[in-house]
Amino acid sequence: MEIDGLYSILAPLGAEKDVSMAAHTSFRIGGPAALFFEPKDPAELMLALKKARELHIPVTLMGNGTNLLVRDGGVEGLVLKLGPRFSGFNLEGSLSVALAGTLLSSLAAATVRAGYMGLEWAAGIPGTVGGALAMNAGAYGGDVKGALQWVEYLDMPTGKIEKRQPAAAELGYRRSSFSWPERVVLRAAFRIEADDGQAQARMADYNQRRREKQPLQYPSAGSTFKRPPGHYAGALIEEAGLKGLSVGGAEVSRLHAGFIINRGGATCADVLALIEQVQARVLASSGVELTPEIRIIGRDKA
Ligand SMILES: Cc1cc2nc3c(=O)[nH]c(=O)nc-3n(C[C@H](O)[C@H](O)[C@H](O)COP(=O)(O)OP(=O)(O)OC[C@H]3O[C@@H](n4cnc5c(N)ncnc54)[C@H](O)[C@@H]3O)c2cc1C
Image (cartoon, rainbow, N blue to C red; front, side, top):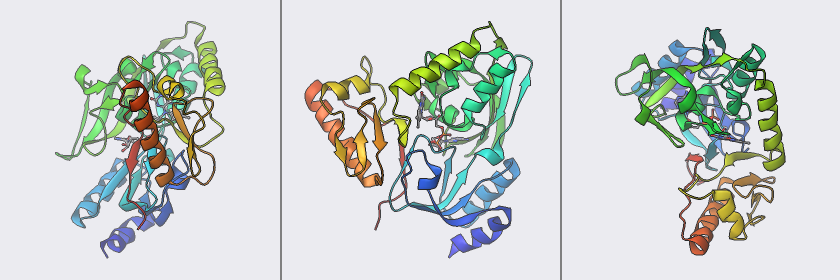
């Protein structure tokens, strides 16, 4: 099988076969990745992409797996994770420059510790810089679009590495042109400025609000649905009386109806069935169609 050919090339660099995706996602759900590899630099990343293409092996790219729901049959082919091995950052004048695998929360906290502000909104978002670019992640009035100075990425159709300022239209509400499979974010620079003396307090306040309002003690992928124009998904779900609704181990959080949580042993099938029920019942009660914010990957269990 071709996967063994790719394994023999990537195993010396740390690739492993049959790696549980539940262990690599904040939902703690998902079957195995046939082959799992964390490149440490662009050269390893490009080698893996090139060899996978030559061997006709499908590739999936992930960051910290905090916005992913992986199906129970796992992921075919190669899963590439840009995570801790592909991380690090520098403060360069008025810019905070980070590799794609850097945790956004670590970047925000380190930027504040160094006496700068501008990324406090990101302190509680558990994803990587690359995942944040791909989702245009945001919170508490800030988002990637508002802070991004430039992005360096691998353009998949041309195979070239580019570095530039994004155009306004390339980033929208939880939407971005800098996302797999079109592009792989390698590095990004965010604008920062001297701390006004309140950055630490703002960050602590945002984190406190999260601890009070979000079911952080349970595995989840954050907000399940996008915010529909003019509404809040959580409020619509709560108004439809769906807090606590469950399928198997998946439950609409009683603390924050916008989150589906894994109360223990939830399968992807449980979460998908619950998502469908929530969508149907919110549509019936309010006329509003909810669309998932989380990205669903992989294949059903045979
Ligand atoms: C408790 C909790 C709270 C959350 N709060 C927020 C919040 O306040 N605001 C918010 O916006 N989100 C929030 N999220 C969702 C999630 O953290 C963000 O969407 C985050 O940006 C995802 O980053 P990730 O590295 O985990 O990406 P992943 O989940 O691994 O991947 C998400 C998508 O990004 C793509 N991707 C990942 N890395 C790259 C890369 N280098 N280049 C190109 N594409 C890439 C993947 O292919 C995938 O399609 C929350 C999640 C949890 C669990």
